Length: 215
Image 1 (spheres, helix red, strand yellow):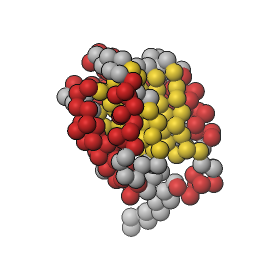
Image 2: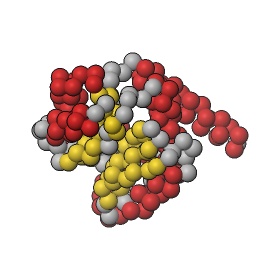
Image 3: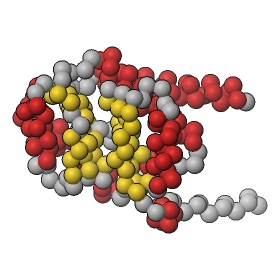
Image 4: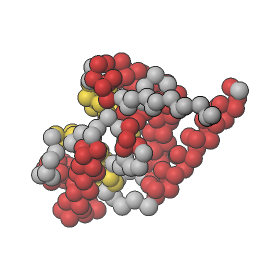
């Protein structure tokens, strides 16, 4: 059973990584953070309205940067609960500053964390490696079984893994431990909103009522 479980885990990881790398190869220099769609929306700890707004923020910010800076920067935009994380590369310090200024003007943003590095654009190989690291961290969160992976948004840039989400202190510490022990993770940065265990219980969906036995 243990070998079967490990095989299933490996297959899942490879499939997720392959699909993400395929998507990555088709991306323009501006990459928008992963959108929450379908059934995932029902178990996200943000309200449905906030999830939609986060997606809108990412789209509007990407459009504004594309218009202003074009291919001069490679910026990943990730919004969670209207807090925006900027990662990637800018060729000059002035471009880096302008990225933050442009994104900061997008409506409904609460705050901007600028982690854009002043350097040349990373290679496809480096970006693919970061995607693989992110998928490994997510797989570790799934394996933990004592928290919901859907409560977190995971972003990796040049070996630095960023954790975003609305989680309890227990979940934050557990996720940090998992990320730090994941191969390929050089540094972990927490951008987490801490909630109480009582608040978590109110956010969790009620258990479905047991069905009546067939007559």
